[in-house]
Image (cartoon, rainbow, N blue to C red; front, side, top):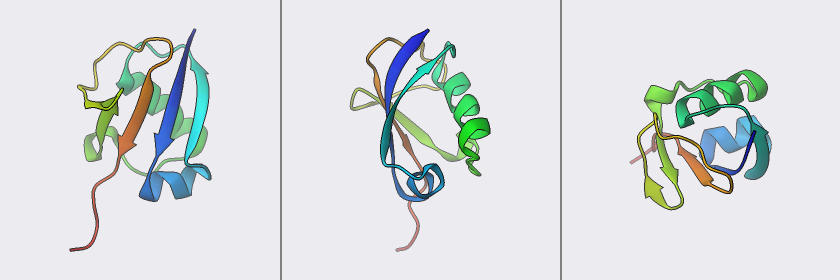
Length: 80
């Protein structure tokens, strides 16, 4: 089990009903974590539509999770 801190923005914040939360997960990677959250939170966006940052640095989706990571899922920017 890994404990991570999540931050949500824009559409994901609206769908999650919160801007941040701490979760305990059995997911091994960022990809697995997002898929777990999609099921739990009903997110409509796929991982391919997002960028992800861990501890303030953009990251690859296959990065392993570590206790205490702060993860930000970044949806596409709308508007112009």
